[in-house]
Image (cartoon, rainbow, N blue to C red; front, side):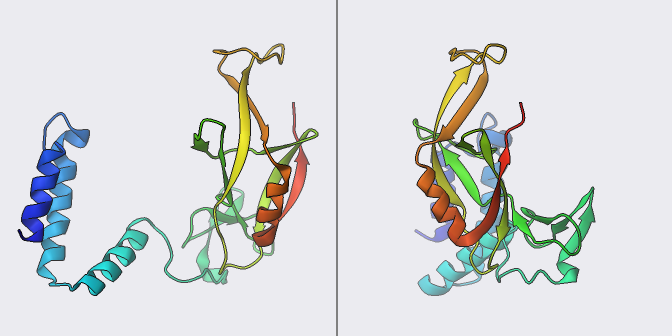
Amino acid sequence: MDLVSFAKQELKIAGLFDKDSDYGGMLGDAVMELMKVFSKQGHSGCSASMTLALFQKVASYKPLTPLTFNEDEWVDVEHCFQNKRNSAVFKKDKESRPYYIDAFYMKNQTDVTYSGSLCVGNGKKLGRCYIKDPNEMPKICIDIIDWEVNKETGVKEKGSGWWESKMKDPSQLDEIRKYYDFDLEEISK
């Protein structure tokens, strides 16, 4: 079976052409359009893998080479500068150090992952993660424990909708410290 026929069959089995699927069947159509172009290119196994890897990166707005932090890589946005090649990289002004808002993400005790403010204990949270080397900017997973609390009383209360968390193992800050400089900030109440 050729690649286009295989893709069509798999998308059909998955129901991705159905009107009640995500985006009313348009995902299946979009993938088929890409598949037809990809198939016409006549890739071998190696060039197919390389093409897919490159396409995945650029289609996801990921740079192919390290950021340079040259002046032409920045755009002035409200009250700061944002990197044009990686939208998660910012700096306060033209002269300040770049920081990466995706330097870490959190995983709770039920394996749910999310981003946000990281409480490290003792009334402190992790501040901005300043990039040490643009060649090494990993997203680091930090294990946390979270719980619901009553916002008014601060007492644990399931179903209250207000969550608090803390790092499970503060030594995980050492992993962040390998790649980023950071300050610990006071948590405002």
